[in-house]
Amino acid sequence: MRRALAAVLLTLLGLLCGSVAGSAAARAEPPVEIVVEDGAGILDSNRLVPAVEAVDFHEPTRVAVFTYRGSAEANLNEEVLRFARANHPEWISADGQKWADGLFIFAVDPLGRHVGTYMGEDRKVSLEQREDIQNASKDLLRDAQWTDGTIAGIRRGAELINQPWYQSTGFLVTAWSTVAAAVLGAGTWLIVRWRTRVDSRKELARGDASYANVSMDLQVTELNAGTIPESSRYGSTVLEKHRTFLAKYNAATGLSNQAHALTARSMSRRPNLKLIRGYADASAELDALDDVIADTNALLNRGSAWASAWDRQLAPFRGDLAALEQMLTKRHAEGDSATAAALRSFREQSHRDIERWSAELADGTITPETALDRLRDARTHLTELLKNHADTVIAGFARNDREARLMRQEMENAQAGTKAKYGRTYEPSILGTVYPSYYFFSVPAFNTGFSTGVGSVSTARGGGSTTGYGATGGSFSGSGSSSNF
Image (cartoon, rainbow, N blue to C red):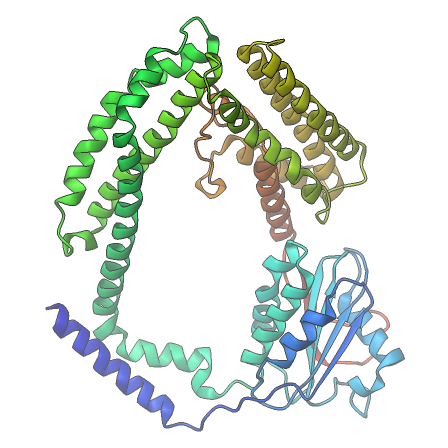
């Protein structure tokens, strides 16, 4: 059955490809000229120009890149036309009413958050295609990756400008619709089963690696748990987790047996992928927990490995401190604000505190439990500072209460990990075991909430295209438009 379906699919694909191959071969034309007018000072020309030189257009095309620092209320179309009239009259047709033939302009306003595309009459595309070109750049532009966003937009423009009929969306839709009834079910079935089988094998390997670690350390884990002091607040909570450890291990063993009993063919089925993924997740959780049990025993009892165990408890906090500066230098991150200054001051003080706690722990001035208390308090303080800075960022970016609520919701979702897209996972540390995942607000979670919030607000503002050239455009009617990102 599978071979027959594959044969049908290959035959029909061959007919489709043959019809395309019979058409005139598409031309590959590098830009005949590249002009970069980076008034905003946001582009890396050493990367931009070679990347654009490597782009193939369907017809010889002059590429112009224009950036300037405008505002949310400004009309990018009008600014591009004003600049062209004053500095590049060759970008405009002889009658002054259109863009010059053979020209493609890609424009970015990083402050006003606008992106625009403009073409000569012999290079123009539909409004929908102009939006397609602009959309190709927006995810990168939203993340302040100005050069990469510009390259992505130009590449998409090269694909769509003067696109041969047999590469057009309309032709492909029609062609594929012709064969869809015969191949869609078969092709989808084959692809899904193949992808499921590949994912199943990867998940099985992941599960086996974790399960092997847990099995090898099982006796050691039991010995470690047996000497964790129950009188410790941290030790008692970790021991509560351990009490279900063997039951979870036995459940993982059952899942392992079921997963390994599957044939290669049955691994192609979605229910079996779910089973294998459950095995991998259960094993990974146990693998992380046995490490925490070992660290808890070593640290609270000041065993020979206590220093390494303490370093692992500090690792998440150190990671947050190291990531603060990059977070504060992002676009719209309000890096010059009072709340940003408070975060920087906290970072410097925390580095000194970490050294002091470690020294005091080493000479016995403080107990391991006191050291963990101090680490917990520091991370709690960082959480409050990040929340304060979130308020600053929201106030700086949102234009009204509705946008502020939208951004705040995304920030709160990121901290709580309430949506799958935030990817919150178990932190393999003593604090991560004792406290729920949403207890501490980490810098990665802040970055996720911030980026998602900005994107949601930008989308809510509407990315609809602006096609006019403003009050100073006069009768100019060149093909072009801009939109928000």
